[in-house]
Amino acid sequence: MSLSVADVAAAGAAWVWMPDDAEVVADEEYTILRLPEYVAFDLSVVSFTPTRPLGQAVDAVVERARAFGLPTLDWQVLLGDPEGLPAELAARGGQVKIELEIVAADLSEGAPALRPPTVDVSLRWATDVATARDGLALEAAGFRGELPPAERIEAVAARNAETVPAGRGGLVVAYVDGEPAGTGGVAIVDGVARLSGGVVAPHRRGRGVYRSVLDARLSYGVANGATMALVKANPTTSGPILRKAGFTGFGPEPVYAVPLTGDQPR
View (tube, rainbow, N blue to C red):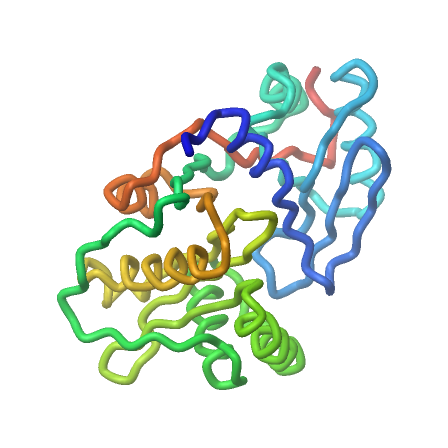
């Protein structure tokens, strides 16, 4: 199997992150999420399939987003989005907030062999509340969010207890010296291992903890039928590690912050 840009773009577009406690506004052209308070993003566009001239479609999304009364809309430009979308967002005052790239690896012949860590790492799937709390605390610190409320942590553990053994994915947590050191999620959908939320505690970096978490997720993906691994990666942090692990970059997918208050430049 050889991954094409079209394959990766389609898999990336199909990956719509939609927490079950988010408020969803959707029509045939777009989906906007009002995210819960513990998430670092407030308001986000997670799908955009315009059926009219691009500028009009963008205006419709921005106008609907203003109804939430929030100052900013986060909008990720995907690999398969219309070519003129970045210019349209910039014309409305949008600025790149996060530089991301979509990277993928061919798993049709198995998971790549990764260099072992330089410390003793133990791995646990977050199928119990304590492990789920450890993983979500690492995620919150790494992505500048907040620890979810207790009921949300319990729900994550309960979901993992169902999905991990069923081969649909979950959250894995790495421990060093008995302390949570790193975490990452994986979801298996239509033969694609979607890898998300990879983060390592700052004082544990540079020792192979990220590779251990990556290896666990790739091995899990292969064991459960995945032939592609997909990541929306930070090109300066996880990106280089993923490339060394056999991933290929297919293009940028930046997140724009589009202002929703005041006069909009055009």
